[in-house]
Image (tube, rainbow, N blue to C red):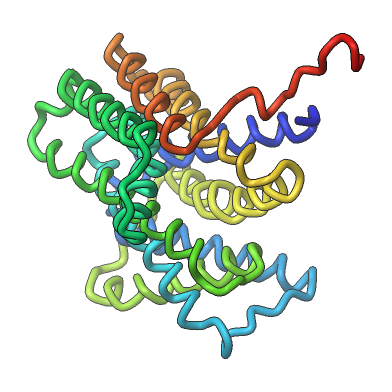
Length: 297
């Protein structure tokens, strides 16, 4: 992998890891619904500006159903569930539980195709379940009221990503940028009716307002562009490495900025979940930086 791509990979991991920090900051103040409506609408406006600059058209007449389905499954619903969970769970716990998305994707894919997963994938699913049990069972915050529902919501968000990934794999081909742009507008429309029933939240303090702006523009709009650039440069398999790095940055941001104190179970649960993810996805780090033998040097 070229050094520039490796840097972009680390940058994207840091940005997406930071999204859980901003969720944790914004959800208790604005509430999940207003926070996520702000997130997706800001991302949609940012991507619209980019589309106008690049003269990209959405082809709404042809793909509007696809955008609505993808925007609901891959953005509106999982974002809302994560924001709900962020009112209770730590940044570390949120980012690690979210890393189970590929595990759910493999399980949904097996059910979709009505095929038994290979033994390696079954072992990965088992390890993933053990990792979540270890992480959740020993984290002190899970003993607080409402924590069990928050964990279920975070796992539900990961399940949504797994369903969306399988849908996207079987859906008609749409340009990746248009997928991001169209799905953000669709997510905005999905959430808009519900916001009409809620009063406008009070103007948040500057740190929270900045967190909302960064969540929408940086962690959603710009992150999508960076991710698609990575996929074009190094391919989807190498870009998948971001799944393994996001929890590391989530723990880092929670520890350094919110004074969260990860324990040994945090590391053990993370490693178990990521090992299971690697088995399920067939991820091999050797494919990222292949080593040339001496006779070919």
